[in-house]
Amino acid sequence: MAFLLHAQPSHSLPAADLRRSSPLIHRGPASVRFPLKCKAVDSYGGNSDDLYLLTGDTAPASALLSRTRLEDAINNNTTRLRIFSGTANPSLAQEISCYLGLELGKIKIKRFADGEIYVQLQESVRGCDVFLVQPTCPPANENLMELLVMIDACRRASAKTITAVIPYFGYARADRKASPFLMANRVFHITLPFYIFLQTQGRESIAAKLVANLITESGADRVLACDLHSGQSMGYFDIPVDHVYGQPVILDYLASKGISSDDLVVVSPDVGGVARARAFAKKLSDAPLAIVDKRRHGHNVAEVMNLIGDVKGKVAIMVDDMIDTAGTISKGAALLHQEGAREVYACTTHAVFSPPAISRLSSGLFQEVIITNTIPLSEQNYFPQLTVLSVANLLAETIWRVHDDCSGDIEPFSTLGID
Image (cartoon, rainbow, N blue to C red; front, top):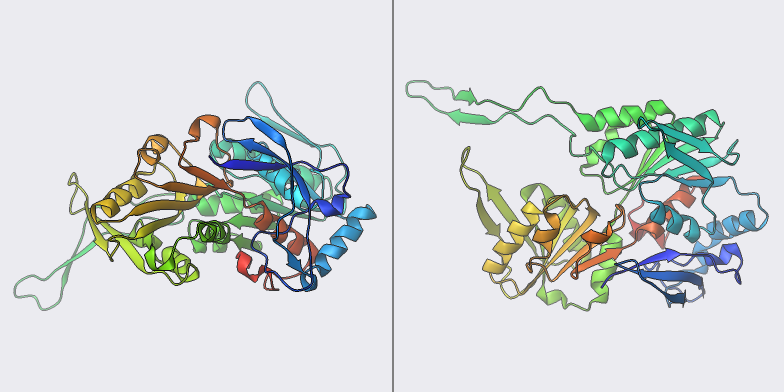
């Protein structure tokens, strides 16, 4: 059963020592370890005893220069970094702040009887770099509006910079108009092709651009997002966008399972995710790639699913950026079993889990379903095959680099997917 680690500061350690090193950080000869006192909370909310984590994961001394500046600022109470959380995913925000050795900023958020949102910062942010952690997950409209009001409150409180940390960016799938279906048919006695344009799904809103405009106009100076549905969404913003990827966290977990690289095959559940799956396979010991090709030959005609690649006797790793209703990925898993796959794993960053996703994912098709905590899960959405990994270290490292004006291409953090 998966465990969620909610970091709680130890009173016997200075704040700067509470940050644990990333499990992805390269080990070096000269290194420092960061202890962290945590409380392990199982999937059903039961608390276990306090645990002191001091793993072998370490950071080389050459990578601790920016950390040292942060520690000095925290110890001298001069840091201008402030982290606030909305109501969408407060546990992730708490992990991020604990990783950085900071306390979450005090903020009051409430809703009036008519549903209007009220936000009041309860500490000064004048001249500070403010980071607002708020995924626009379901209920998307409520959480989005809350983020906009939080940004406006910080702007009116004279914050130096405001960064919207959006682990899951809602409306990202509405990033373009549907392309017209173009069918070419050569007609007798006509030398040029005759193109027939069938009825298309036009006159649609590109909501991803609209939401980007709303965030920009509300006063945000920067956006930090995790695994956007499509890369072009970054271009919808007129402000800088830092795009981090959840792949390193999942790859590190898969590596710990000790599956032989000769038995692995990475599978894209649809043609649109081939680039993502190819990049994943390259980092997973350059594993072979397979693709589920789904075609519909006409309206009201059943889908025909074909598999491109060989999965017989192998462990199939299905990779996608999100799981919503789990229709596509579960049908793909069924096809993989038919083609002789020994085990099927589902890996995704964003667990939207709209009904009937839970029943599909827990039906026995998957050996394990691996997700991250960009979206909080309710208690009824846990099932035995589910594993939840934290992206708090990725987001925290990126936040510090934005605040400290340093790049993510410095070893050992170049593998974290920070642009």
